[in-house]
Length: 254
Ligand SMILES: Nc1ncnc2c1ncn2[C@@H]1O[C@H](COP(=O)(O)OP(=O)(O)OP(=O)(O)O)[C@@H](O)[C@H]1O
Ligand SMILES: [Mg+2]
Image (tube, rainbow, N blue to C red; front, side, top):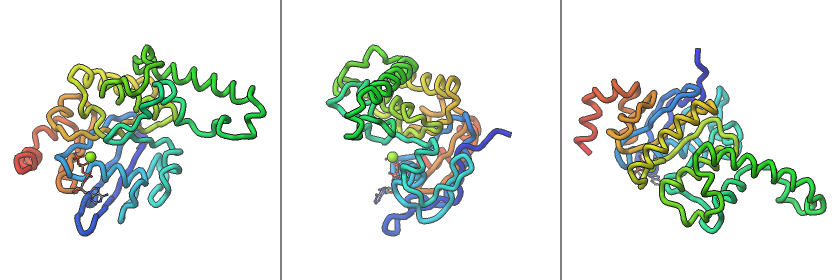
């Protein structure tokens, strides 16, 4: 049986009486790509925020590779291999692409004053991190942009660098909040191809939020959960979701 990477049970969160996320259940199997879709305001980002511990959930259970993480702080949850991007990409615009990738890894020697006395130690580590960053940039097919400032990147290139930062911290489950929002047509295709490549070559598990249902249904991903008004209204493979009148109704009613 395939290992479950992320298991969510009865997840709920209200904001002043508004049920933003209401009793959500799903399993994301290892090496699967899942879409979490639904109209604006349906609770997708709040689902991410509660899973990753950024906002405390009111109730429910979240297990990462079988380990309960409810109530734990975000850094502890991410140390289990669960990493996410935010809906608004947050790169350090005044730094280069390479520098943006160098910041996320933890336990770097350069952050300690004591280690300033032992430059050989952090030089070695820095060399290894640069090598790792180039391997990731190559995988993402943006190694030619390593020395460009983040402020010079297009929307789609920024999204790829954002994904690259997750890979630098050895993420095993990538949670991407609208990875193609605001990205021009051909680059959206490239981002999806890249995600499929990461799944295949690095064995990653990927959860993608998208509010354009037609778009995500065309992308041939494994499994889809549809939310509307905080509720989970469908959970299944894309062809079943596509056929569902419930979903069409939810969208017509939007
Ligand atoms: N921190 C917050 N405080 C109060 N209300 C919030 C907060 N975050 C989200 N909400 C509300 O919860 C509901 C769900 O919002 P959420 O951002 O999860 O939706 P979404 O599905 O990600 O939407 P979009 O597609 O627009 O990104 C919305 O009504 C929103 O206004
Ligand atoms: Mg959102």
